[in-house]
Length: 238
Image (tube, rainbow, N blue to C red):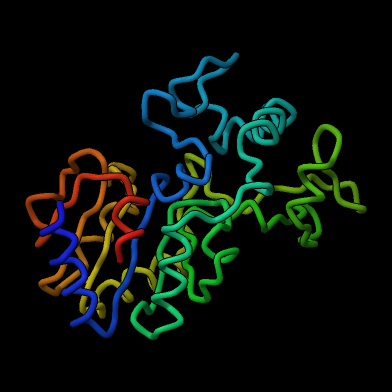
């Protein structure tokens, strides 16, 4: 472990254009549950399967039930950044880290001070009326009663990517380009099993691909360095 940390530090020291690609595991140490672990949202019991609730069809056909789940389980407003978020923001301030690509929707990277964050699955912080397009903040949505409504009476939809919805093309393109241009790619806290986001890793062309995750991923054999450990344990030593 110590030797791997030493190699990681050396890679960071030698790099000028680092891109970080992270998933739910980045935020679990802030107290936010992930989706696929044994204690994750997808393994908890609800009236409907969570993966069904978080789909476009369910949102359109069972809007009230969607928001009941959304407000109870996806409200991240009171959570704070952890050591991983903070260290990444520090690397950004030092000019080492050029971009963060995240599958998370919690906004914690921005809370920690990171400036260039591509949220490929959207964010709870952004919400728009489906009728007139007016923007609303997360507090308005989470504090609303029942289905959040705009002053024009339209339903307010969180700007998060639900199952059955495509990624925003502009974000997808710039994320892939950032990875293509990076001289170091750190992938952390993700099982790399959610597509198309997981396929972004294939755009990396350098020789410093680092995967940090508690469990093995399908991309480990392509990595130059694999560290199977909690993220906080690793980033606290950088």
